[in-house]
Amino acid sequence: MSAGLEASGRLIRPGRILAWTLLFIGGLIMATPLLYMFSTSLKTSGQVYDLRLIPTDPTLKNYVEVLKDGRFLRWFLNSLLIATAVTLSNLIFDSLVGYTLAKFRFRGRAFVFIAILSTLMIPTEMLVIPWYLMSSQFGWLDSYWGIMFPGMMSAFGAFLMKQFFETVPDDFLEAARVDGLGEFAIWWRIAMPMVTPALSALAIFSFLGNWTAFFWPLIVTTSRDLYTLPVGISSFSAESSIRWEMIMTGAALGTIPTLALFLVLQRYIVRGVMLAGLKG
Amino acid sequence: MAKIELQGLGKRYGSAQVVHALDLTIEDGEFTVFVGPSGCGKSTTLRMIAGLEEISEGRLLIGDEMVNQREPKQRNIAMVFQNYAIYPHLTVGQNIGFGLYTAKISKTEKQTRILEAAQTLGLEPLLNRRPAALSGGQRQRVAIGRAMVRDPAAFLFDEPLSNLDAQLRAQMRMEIKSLHRRLGSTIVYVTHDQIEAMTMADKIVVMKEGRILQTGSPLELYENPTDVFTARFIGSPSMALLKGKVSGGALRVAGAEISGRAPARVSGPLLVGVRPHDLEVGEGEPGAGFRAMGLVEAVEPLGAETLTHIRIGEAQAIATAPGRVLPEVGSRVPVRAAPGTLHLFDAASEKALGRI
Image 1: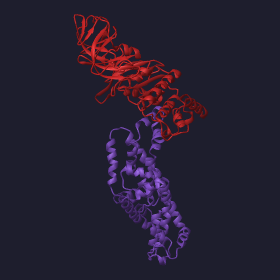
Image 2: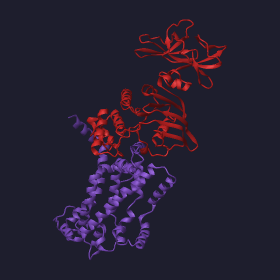
Image 3: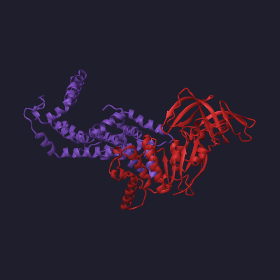
């Protein structure tokens, strides 16, 4: 009884009403494109420009068509493979770099850290040409490795992990040292499990970034079999006419892995974002 | 089990010398406590023994072998840290088992040892819990368990009780002490708490500013401190110091009457130390030891006795009165100390000159 009173008492406060209203509007703005994506994926090509949110005659035909088309599955798996591999690589290498910078004292440490940070200030567009030249010289053009290599390690990830590893008290590492663990085992068996929130956040950032990556995969790939999902979906529009309903169906299917990952790791991500002082 | 020898052991950070050439032998099976104020170099010394801190100079021998260049894991020592450092992502059992990380023994042997340690420390029902679900005292026991399973050459403790409340601290003191008795292992223990040092140690090492001031058993240090610092640091409440002077062999302290002559060759200004438990409230016999009148400034009734803060001349001192006696604040009371209980220190060097 008293809990009910308390709850209703809280709802009445004007500040709270304002906050909820703003959050609701914000949520609506975020959700609208997503809802339109799903809505359009349920429409026929003739209905695409009818902007009603709920289709008059919803159909799953597009889904059947997309899934029947072998190319979609291929692109989906390409994206999954690339995003997963790059994410795993980031989790390992970024945390190795972050751990080293956070927990070891060596000459030039500050310089290395600043050098890594400064690469964050270079926009991707500027890097694409050197990447391309590099890929072409090493023969990596139009290959999985060519798509993946620029993202295998990230300055942002190293920075995020460094910040987190600094919160791990040295006593844990020293206790492990006394217990007889080698430095690598200390990192892997003691330090890593203590920064799982950061690892989860990094996994989500990294997976999302690579799952949705468009520009570089578009440039480095030429054969359709190597397209990632965003590149592949956009190729629907390059054909005779723009088939929005197909693009939206592909995009809708493409959100599934990221949503799944987010649902699994979401309880960690908030802490990760807060600690890195980022905007989501 | 092993003897630990420090031969001219020193530590420098850049140009700052934080530990000055320590010479010390810790016998096999001895419980040695390093005690001193914070920043005195006691933890640094312990960390050098553990191998967590590089040794700048001197030699460190564990079991007659020089180990200066050896990694912590090669020294076969176990360490318990101030904040326990038990791994939060592992269960109690796994934490204890981590002490056996390098041990080349079978899984069943490992389990047996973990179980033994858990039994000894009363952790058996908690083996599957995570550290987050444990109290401070239980966490500390897990840390000790992790050290115990190893059967190390020596245990190192770095202020292990300072995060516990007073009652638990007293209990853990006794537990660690009885553990030492049972295991008979060499223990090096660092603390800033002189009560811990007094109650647990076979040997106390008093440190100050990176140097060893005095080494000895608790009672040796209590009875015969070699300088003012040790005299005041060991024993609670602290020894009171009164300014005195020797002229013609007679010792004079303002506001007090002292029988007995200062040792020969002592002359000039000095400090007279008297421990609260030697200074009693009550009329003394003329010509027997120390007698004075003190102005009562505060009283602390502890039940069994009453600590009476008094002023003798310029100096402050604490005298003890029987439990049910409560001297009135502001009144003057007679105090006395028996012959042989006064400690004399040189006023300039603060070194001990003997007792009268």
